Structures are given as C-alpha cells and as structure tokens.
Image 1 (cartoon, rainbow, N blue to C red):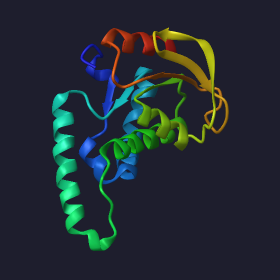
Image 2 (image 1 turned 45 degrees about the horizontal axis):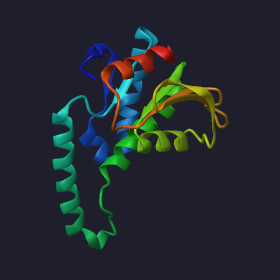
Image 3 (image 1 turned 135 degrees about the vertical axis):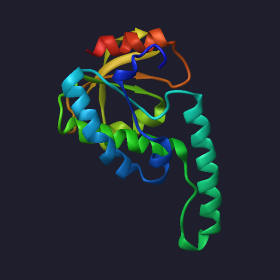
Amino acid sequence: LSEIPDERIIRIDPIKALIDPETTALETNDRLVNKMKRDGWVILTAAVDENDISRTKEATSTLNTDTQLESSLNTTVVDPGERIAQALALTTEKTMSKATVSGLFLTGGDIARTTLDILNASNLCLTGSSIAEGIPEGWIVDGPATETRVVTKAGGFGSAKVIIKCIDHLR
C-alpha cells in the first residue's frame, strides 16, 4: 500500500480486531463513511506495513496463551485471519448501509469469503474479463448488496500497480 496516499487509507487496529471484531467495526464505520463521503474512494485495511503484521502475530500468541490458561471457560484459539476478516467485513456491511459504494476490491480468500457471507451474497456473476491475470471482475447477484461490482485478488500476488489498477477500475 506504499503507493496509495495515506489520506485514502482507513486502517482498523488489528489488535482490537483480534479481541473484538464487532466493536472494531462499529468504531471504524463512522470514520470510513465520513471519508468516503468527503473524498470518494477509500481503502479499508488492517495492515499497512510489516510492523502491523508483527504486532498482530505477537498479540495472537499472547491471546492464545491466555485462552489456553482459561480453557475452563470454553474459549477457543484465536484465528487472526478469521477475526480480522470478520472486522473488515462487518465494517464493509455497516458502511454499505450508510454510504454509496461503487465497488468492492477484496484481497485474500478469507476476506472475500467472509465479506460476501456477511453481505448475504451467495453468488457472484463474473463478467468473463479480468483486470489483470488472475484478477476477475464481477458483481453480486443476490442479497442486500445486489449489483455491487466486485474485484477479487488472491492475497499472495500482485504489485502495487495492480492494486491501483483494480481500484481505478472500480471508480
């Protein structure tokens, strides 16, 4: 995301998302809606650099250690990908109920699946074309987000220029 201007990025706190994805979404939603209404397109993310990833790994380890100590409370091991995907998806859902969204750029399978599940979107219709190799475009066919344009990209590949190309395509 280094090529994206800072003013275009809304970052959820990944540590808060690990602990409570729903509260994280509520706390992030107003900032995101206001920025979208003021500036247009925005990127919602949990990690802007390697430091975010390192901090999240450390926090996950601590939470899982604490969870094991409290196993009598029937708690489960914290899955960071699942919790962060849930916080991002819930924020997206809340935002779409308050602001016009021209499209969704979903990176990573967990984030795409969780976002589409929370939006009650069981089907996508692909256009048959792609923004770049392996990056299809389509739209949501059902649920409250019907006809919302969607571009998906696997989390493990693609340059910053590809990300910008995808965002430009959705604007």
